[in-house]
Image (cartoon, rainbow, N blue to C red; front, side):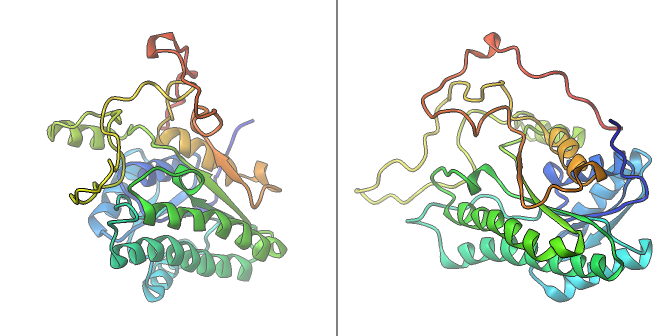
Length: 301
């Protein structure tokens, strides 16, 4: 089975250097023309340049996903250049935050708006363009493992990603009569594989791989009654296959979801995480040197 997105046009929001850029590169590598959005024009242009550097057709879009005016302008720009949109990947989100006792209302609201309005507005306006042109398109909303099970220190992020999961099912029902499919994808702390991002982290003295310390959220207060907010020590290996994968793994899966082979798949969630979500909480895999691990990754070109 050879996946091909030739002749299709894709729009990816939140084109940051890790997950968003990886998804965009995968869609382009499988043949799609790709428009990449980010609230930062520089970030969108960097992603576009990465795709073009691999010989792919791409365009950069600056836009705030919480602004309907800017969302419509982004969608119109893609339609003006390419004439249609076949694929939408809602990836824009805010990372980080604090726990329940410390998060402020403004930050909580911003998380909810970016995930809530971002998914809603882009899905609404792209889906309208698909329906008008009788395009049986594919829409993918990127969730998170924190949308299904949670860790401390990221209350707003967990809340917003949980909403994404049910948005997928509701939107899938609304758009099914038009032949438009809506699915979710749940990544779990992917290891960066963007050479530019790895080099940037190395220049800052940051390891290219995700470490076993900390997490997305921040610390708590210093009141005498406080309990520890988040364990910061080294953790044993927790993923059954030894890795949660990279943005390239995410891209391969999303490309397949957006292909014609997945024509009847809608309202579903896809998890590619080396078994992280499936395992029982008490299960500890073997030490790293005792895990065979997955097959070598299939590179994108």
